[in-house]
Image (cartoon, rainbow over all chains, first blue to last red; front, top):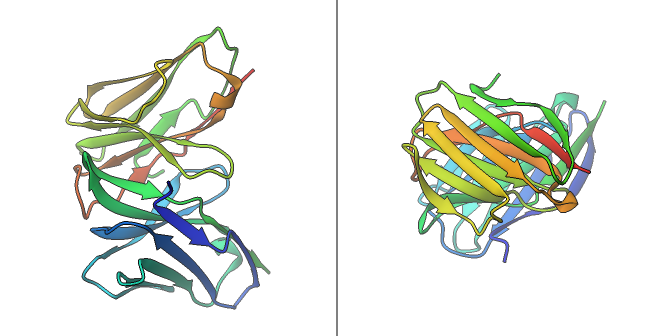
Length: 112
Length: 114
């Protein structure tokens, strides 16, 4: 079964608007990370939030974590066309070894 | 460039061929990973290496054979693949295995099996 699941699967917004993506997971985690992937390229690490943190900021990115609801959100403010990409959450947990499990991603399209 | 280099970028191979994917990092990281990314599916963790020792093998078919000769290089040897093995193969590295370490990914090898 899938550990992390992003919602929505696809999102299309106008430049300048805010984009919000959500991630839900099933089991307890140590931390959660968000990554961005441009089409056909590798993933780029955006932000890590630990299980004892509730909110974290990095530039135009804001990540929240609600461990009671087993969910996280990624907010991109004042979006730009260059933000067009797929966004993935990755949940960190121990299962044999420590590993990150990725979801299927949210495809964000920012229209100029 | 992220610091993790994968070659080749694209590979087309027949089902009877043998080929290898290469991953190289000079970030001083001790852990390296192979992931498979297929359309509309989550990234699948295939193999994990820590200090050149394989620590995870996620029920990957034996037609995929990893090799880690040193902490900077990781290979994925391919033989007698199936068309469903066509995917983007991503290599990643991290400082160590464990929490609090973000992954640095390469750009991937787009593999097509014909």
